[in-house]
Length: 434
Image (tube, rainbow, N blue to C red):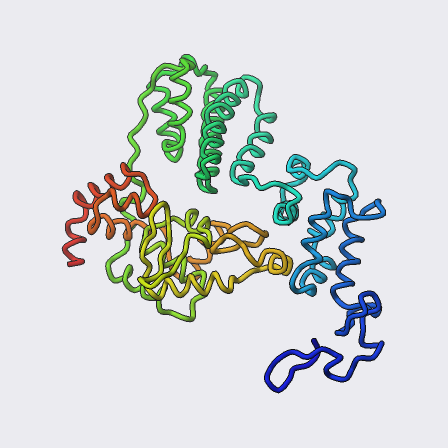
């Protein structure tokens, strides 16, 4: 289409009177703008994709045909042409296409795990060349695979069964229920790292795990206070298998007990998220979800577009199992985000227009990175932790804990603990709110 009629409709070269041989593609003989060597962008794209994926073969291998079809069928060929010309991911994909063995997740796992490898993996999953998998679980397994060989033999004999049969097995069960997130993987890695640090400390003191007493364990807790919250999993596991004597663990307090917002700060920031049009749309959506429903960033980025629906009674978002009524402005923001998601890379826009995530990330078919989201909110002076805590206090003082658990997707015991905490410690805050 090279022209536009009076009524705004598109016109082809024939309708514009420019149907001459020089204005037609030399390959498909269709009229239009010629891109290179007398060919239209679509035909040029097809040839370059074949060159990229054929490798040493005469044609694209069967296991890469789905990737070729996905690239050549992009709605707009120009972003893909730019990606083929400049992206390191395209060069890495060409190198993989030249290998004799078929592409698998295990093959990619053996490569350096940088941005390029993650991008190539995402492209292959979107195209259907590779099956989908829980990347958070894979991250834990890859980290463990690289960590265990570096441990001394006597440490590995303890850490390996703890990590593989306790931590990773539980992670796989949660991943099977689609309950294993980025934060869960980070927590499991921290648990294993704490166990390694503890055994290293015992080695430095020339002490055995089996002879460890409460006094020595208390000394370690005092020397490393930041490890008190993560060492419990290993100590309970070791004691249950009689690798050490039963030890008393410190009672974990709430690390966020003093990290709250005032009523004015909370209300002002919520109004900004709902009404300030100078803020990016993603910032407004995330900030409002944190302040209205006390959601962590790791849970917000995992929200998919099918969890939003709108009918005659209003806009709803299903956070866990039950739909939650949204304020009209937040519902409109989410509706606009689904209709026009903002993407960051050319090939992501071309291949992943129908991303399942409300907040699509840099890699195709993946959500945004939680660390990046947290930093983005800080840039706009919208803290997360203090806002979440304040929102939870607001919620448990107006709704029963079991309702909070169902709506916000937290455990009933956590909701009950929050309710008791609000009754015990926030009388002055509730009075100020009234």
